[in-house]
Image 1: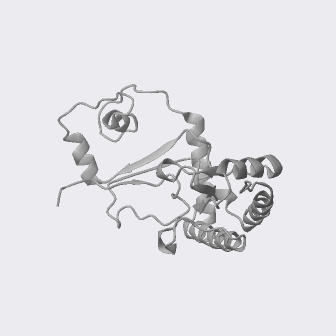
Image 2: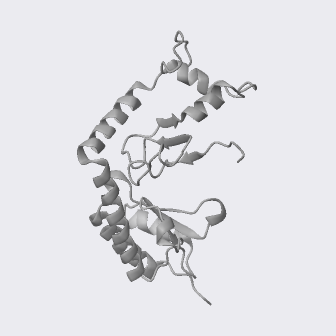
Image 3: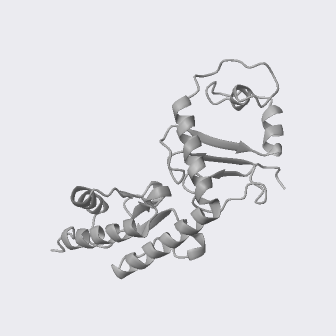
Length: 218
């Protein structure tokens, strides 16, 4: 109705959950190399629909950022059929690392990767419930298999749990962001880290943390 573009953040989902850009009518899809794709951080992936491309080239206002000017970036990658101009130094090492990570994903199979992340997430849900922990997202259909949010139990501080798990088990989890700050723990099981063994290690660590990190009610 409003001729808007649909932009989707797939940083924590690309490679770990089904995404069908064309079929789902996504106009701009962006992601990062460092999550489910298993590559080092520093490389961003972005794709535009024909509708988005037309919108970009028809804009009447000048982009406020030289660095993020999509038309200049398109020129660097040879997408506009024009002579190439200098815009930035290409992060060659990051691109080669991303290429290798994508090759490994192809070797595994995209559907198998989706299935593995889904099954590992279900195993995590069961282990968390065994510990008496509650999932922040109640509707299973709305949960992301790669990142799980857990409600911080009463009489606990999220920082204490995170610090204990890191110090005693070498496992890194973190707290919430924005409106969920101080309310949840975030657990990422992405790419090669999405295994049942890692879930079981984390469950052991959380069980011990819950035993040692409770605050006095006096």
